[in-house]
Amino acid sequence: MATKAKVAKSKLKAAEIAALYAQLAAERPDPRTELDYTDPYTLVVAVALSAQATDVGVNKATKRLFAVADTPEKMVALGEEGVANYIKTIGLWRNKAKNVIALSELLLEKYGGDVPRNRDALTELPGVGRKTANVVLNEAFGEPTIAVDTHIFRVSNRTGLAPGKNPDQVEAVLERVTPDTYKKGAHHWLILHGRYVCDARKPACWRCGIAEICKFKTKTPNPADAPKKAKPAAKKLAKKVTKPAVA
Ligand code: SF4
Image (tube, helix red, strand yellow):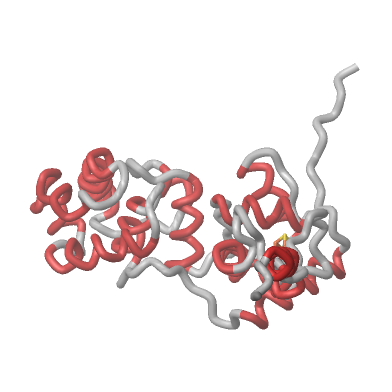
């Protein structure tokens, strides 16, 4: 008999999930991406450039790039070498320059230069995977998509909100358990919480607003509560004792 595939579940109860999102929403009422962009096209390019690079690094590069090319037409006119010259400071720049030109050409060819509001169409663009497509749908078009990056993956597993072995599993659980009212902001709240509080190496559990809900077992204690190091009193005493007596 065929065995049923196990469907991953949240370790949190519905009330805990609602409380977790309510807290994150209260901390950041108006969350948005930290990538700079002006329209769906510049967002697609910025997100495509952000793989294995920091948002700060991408913003530095795109500030100069978008000043000369902020439309598919201008980008194609600039050419692969031209794009490469602006993005050499970020990782995988050679491949990314190639993709930016190819995706701009495809947007012109198939969509008149517009960015399609559709996940399948977006993932057809060179350099645009499911994660990038979800970010674009959420950020540029207001769709309730959740793109699972390294921060969301970590926070979802540690808290027990959406455990999973890979980003697809985590995304499936998040989509199922996230209340509709929080779906639009969930992506940002979880990323920003992972980036600024639930750090990969040392989560700041002592100042975490969702610590009471989180199921992570080895929470980081407040460094201020660590016992102070004892003063080397023994050394001082030894010096006193060995001092020669004055005649
Ligand atoms: S309590 Fe710690 S592990 Fe849990 S979400 Fe907060 S920072 Fe992360």
